[in-house]
Length: 379
Image (cartoon, rainbow, N blue to C red; front, side):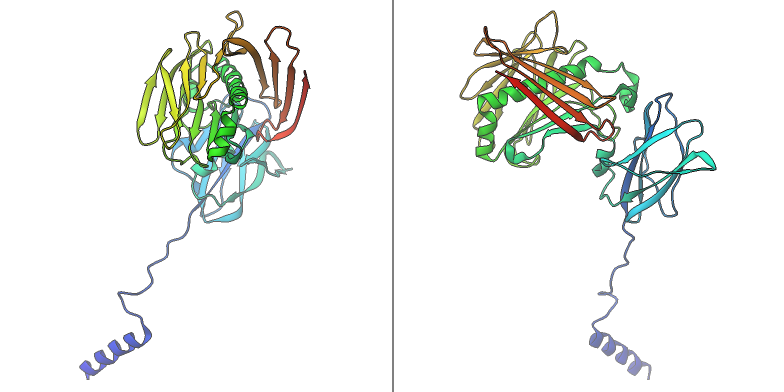
């Protein structure tokens, strides 16, 4: 009888298609991520608010995911996926102006009985904490589509938002001004030389970037800037060339640690030509740091450009562009990160030139999204 019972059990298992070997695995609960930045009404000594999260939610482990600066405090949380998760903070003696998640200002509720308490809700839908860096990044995209041949990112470095290693060194105000001018000058050269048009024809793109001082998830020091080339339409393109141009305290570029995907880093100093190739080993452009701290840019088919400056002014104030050794353009960029106003001025350097162009960009100082852009040009 026992043997018959065992046989019947085996037969039932075969008929239903269920056995110990094919049983469904135990499902684990999905984890998603969220992030928020609490902006103080008035900057002051870095401090941390009291934060209350719902049951099932917690902060991501690691000090880099909970950071206090003079201007704000930010945190990254994890828990079950949800479109909106309520968060309450209590910050005695510190007035909260705004809360940001991603590039959005979120609605706040204030407790009439306790002015130190603020409530809000944020999405917890991110695949990783790293994917939520836009919450703390202050990037204005001046060009975004890789299909246009140029992605251009301008970072806004507010000394009151310095975080991580940047709290241990003087604010890189001079270096920031220098990269704003250098990137703008490079963009002018890329367009005038036809390099951007060639990149579009090849299905490639250039990417211009500076450095950021407020994001503890991104180790982005010492001060530097990038003129990168991607032989494809994503930053994962094979054989991509990513220079890291280091800037000194006077705003001069003095070193290039150039990465080529698959080949590691090469080191270039003033006077050393640094070639950029496409994915088929064709020369695109050669970049050479100048002895004066500027940059020579030599497209494979010419012409020759030099980014230099008036020694009495310096790169943080103005970059001058020579084309085939002749004066061509001057560039000046100012950026008021507190109000969100970036003004770019360009003028002709050639004798008798009357060219002048001014571009005024107003952007949200907390999300970096552009609010308005106006350009005035005179020939």
